[in-house]
Length: 332
Ligand SMILES: [Zn+2]
Image (tube, rainbow, N blue to C red; front, side, top):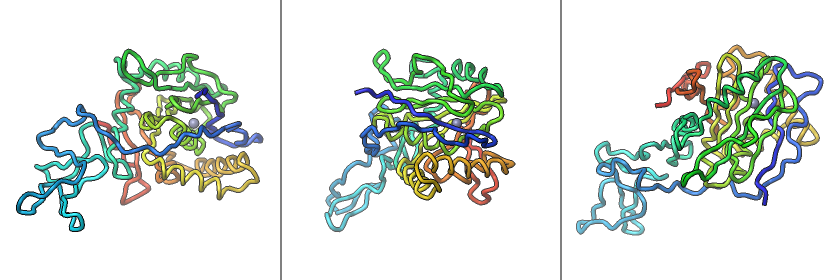
């Protein structure tokens, strides 16, 4: 079974013209793969501070006095001690809190997942585990001219020398079919894509980009779900990465958008959604804030490179107390 299918993606036109946003996704088919990923399983290597951590896996028996150990509470129905930590978290006996193992963070559902910051950094690394994306990003940066079409490249997860890593499509960067449309591969081992947002288009991600990462995530094999990423390369060395933090939320949001959009078929609905978005982008004085206020609750996280070589990244979020303000949290 071929896992390579293409779908047209990503319009970020600054000013919708006569052609509108139609026809972006042609012939998209469901892969039949179940997007529901199971719990996070931890390998021994991920448990680094074992002395202070107790793996919260299953209920344990109380001691002879009927007391439960730290990090457990008595279940009156079963008489056993149930772990108080969930989602793959450990009980830190010195801090007396549940926390994720090193290199992992709690996602929006309370589950420990690999820190997206680490995954983004690994894309940049040029060692045996990294994907060495900088030379590719620089190739894409040379395709940002006003008259250039969108350019892109897909990434797949592959066995290399006994380890799995994300590698670029052998074909290299590919020219899109217009200045706001390009193809992306999805299904099974395809985990990511990097594309340009040429001059004259918005630098930030579009609604179709968010839909694209949903497709990448749901159609990739469960083993690689956490690897899924979408990256946009724009002028002035602006580089954004999008990651999924809650696929169920993302599916619900995209489906609801399609349900509520005007239009008599999916193509018209997508066009409507992109026009609606573009109106807001056009009025915006702060595209990052506008993106986050529109899509910040879609189950996706937004990251921005803070240097040309992509060594440092920040996560952008709306300030909890003032959603006009974008907070920028450095990746460690
Ligand atoms: Zn895009």
